[in-house]
Amino acid sequence: MAGINKNAAHIRANVVSNKRVGQYHQLIVNIGDLAQKCRPGNFVAISVGGENSRMVLRRAFAISRVSSNSVSGGTMELIVAPHGQGSKWLCAQGEGAILDIIVPLGTAFGIPTEPVQVLLVGGGYGSAPLFGLAEVLNAKGCRVDMLLGASTASKIYAPMEGKRAVNSLRIYTEDGSMGQAGRVTEPIAGLIHDLNIAVIYSCGPMAMLSAIDEITRGTDVVHQCAVEESMACGIGICMTCVLPVVDADGNISMLRSCIDGPVMDGSFVQWDKVGKAL
Amino acid sequence: MTALDFSTTLGNAWFPAPTFTASGCASSGRELSQFFDIKTMGGVVTKSVMLKARNGRATPRMAETPSGMLNSIGLQGPGIDAFLAKDVPFLVEEKARIIISIAGETVEEYSTLARKLRSVSGISAIEVNISCPNVENRGLVFACDPEASRRVIDGVRRTIGGELPIIAKLSPDVTDLVSIAKGVVDAGADGLALINTVLGMVINLDTMRPHLGGKTGGLSGPAIKPIAVRAVYQVHAEMPQVPILGMGGISSGRDALEMIAAGASGVSIGTASFGNPTAIMSIQNELKDLLIAKGFTSLRQAIGYAHRPEGE
Image 1 (spheres, helix red, strand yellow):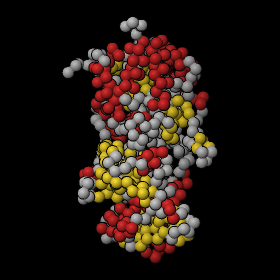
Image 2 (cartoon, chains in turn blue, orange; image 1 turned 135 degrees about the vertical axis):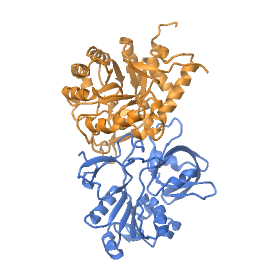
Image 3 (cartoon, one colour; image 1 turned 180 degrees about the vertical axis):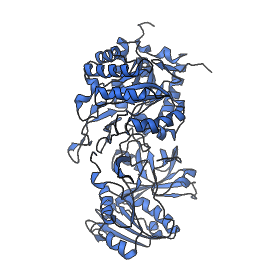
Image 4 (tube, each protein chain N blue to C red; image 1 turned 90 degrees about the horizontal axis):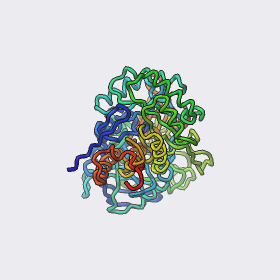
């Protein structure tokens, strides 16, 4: 964790736009020059509820994309599901609203130095940061294929413009309401073989990440996943967002998903021990 | 500019400001140092360290509650040896003033921890956390038992000698806080840290079971502030000579001043830092302005001011 969050700043930032996209909200927020410091995988921590809010903790959201040359200065995009009180409040913030934000936080997806074949796997709105990642990987010359899954069509997040950087995109829904019926993890083993995949990048529910780890375990495929555990602070001081990770010496310890993650090497995460006391 | 003496003391330890982190709410200090210069606050109270490395409790470890949160960490930490090797040198290098918080499972373990601290330089005081609510056996919450509290403090006092101030951290989850406070002061505590979190629970309505991995957790944040102010007031009324580090939901300069007026010589900020990494700096500045605005020329004048006789 040495040097992590060294680019993080605590700022007040303007909402540039807030649009509904299916079941989600797309928020564009002006963060000025900080946009240049954000990498795919990084997240933000936002105060919710306004002044005198009874919600004392920040909410963490993955940065889905940044733009450094927009008319309103550097901006970032967040895809938010209005789920709980905090995210509902955020989704109700219109153009011009001011947000109290800490940005950028956490680890980023590692980008291969060579142009290799990569597979991006997203579950629900966990797909959001994968589109920004796809652009970066595409610019590196990687062939990017993408799988998105959700329980039902309305929970798939797949913006039209996001598909430009992707060679192929397949969608899976458990109820068959969009794309193919089934789980997003079903075709992975076949694709690793057919496309000679070197790296899998994943973002979504923990059960999905764990299922991908089972497929890649014992193979040469690198699995970089963005993990999700509920956080109180987002900056490494509360010790609530931990999960069991093994180190090179075989020692398992509870690492913080905010500061040692959210992006982690999936093969080091002890998936069978997540949510249990060691 | 009005001159204000903002300094405070806890036992024989002097601090330039009365604002501290709350133990368990600043990790190693490195994380907050990304956001402000940690030597500018009164001091860092480190996360309670135990003898051996400890993984803590299962997740979920937290639940937000109205104006507060429950946590159930279970004293995760590297153990005293790794802590002294890695974390303390950083704080010393940053020139932060350090209060080391220790937690043991037995009376003897507290003494062993104290022995390991005896030769460490750069420490201002020791907080003896006898009130962490997140232990498997509630019987181990020493601070709920006057006799056990006394024995822990007595053991630490004998081990550490007379040099370093000992601050006993007490639980509000007791019937008679004042008698427990008196007991630990008699046993050799130089000061008191009031209050630890309040034991609580949240039921998850999806699973219809306790939400936290550890089932119960410690409630912190503004929700418990009146409990903390009451505790500080009651103890200060009985023992005005004993310095108190007050904590529990402080998130503004006004909150800090309430605590000081109730009898605290300093304040610790915990949950507010989770919501705002520079909360301690804002609280420190607001408190300074408030004291000046109210005509105090030193922090010391304001300590226990709410106890002054009628008519003053």
